Image 1 (cartoon, rainbow, N blue to C red):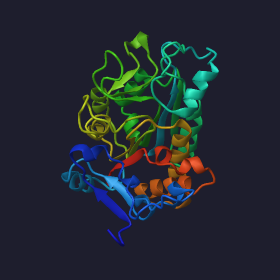
Image 2 (image 1 turned 45 degrees about the vertical axis):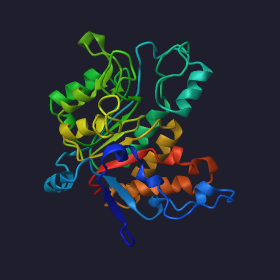
Image 3 (image 1 turned 135 degrees about the vertical axis):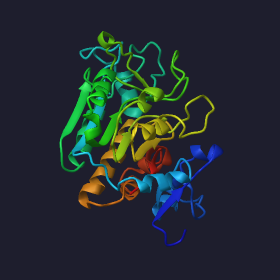
Image 4 (image 1 turned 120 degrees about the horizontal axis):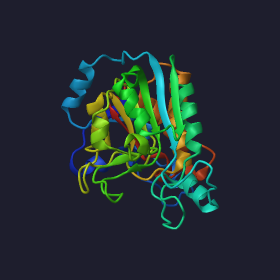
Length: 312
């Protein structure tokens, strides 16, 4: 791979669950006081894109290079969950969990089973600023609902956005009782018969024409059934719906790190229009590794996200 700036990988079996950017190209010095900052991670020299199967590259490159959609970004963030009213005071422990990662609350007595993600509003807003020309539509709180999303899919307006972004909780198959598929948590809308769980099969029914779908949530590369191969769940569903590329995560995402990575990726594209998405993500990861915060150099923080698709 020497001299190649962009690497396309078609993993299979257990390798579909591997974040290839954490591989090292040279031995790590065990005596180094800052081994994670000094490690020669694969991402240092190569932008990485993942393809779910080999023929996907041909299919993706047969598609128009860019979406014909005229609008910039549609984003959903900080949904209101069933047990949490907008004006419900959040306990310090809940706020701490929101700051740590996106997933189910580990404390069954914490009030809401899913902690609110207020910082995700700023994340999506920042991303929208760097999404190029066209309209931005951002839904927060109760408006960030299944009903609102599906209504825009049905009337065709969702297909007018080049970028879709979901900053919420993601769930692997079987993580939530009663739901066998992986999914995303959105605001419930019982008046319209929506439970607030956007499952993989519901995603595949959406009508999209997006260059990029960003899933700033936990475990969004996971399989569609417990024990299934990664990439077979949410990621594949968005491809079926009409996405050209996806940004998904392999493990629980630290919420503050998700903000840094996603906004950093868009900032890289805004600084130099035409930058490959895979290269923009690489730059955002390196900015965390080489930044002033030593903790950010740990791959648990900078490495969960992977780009699926051509990476153009």
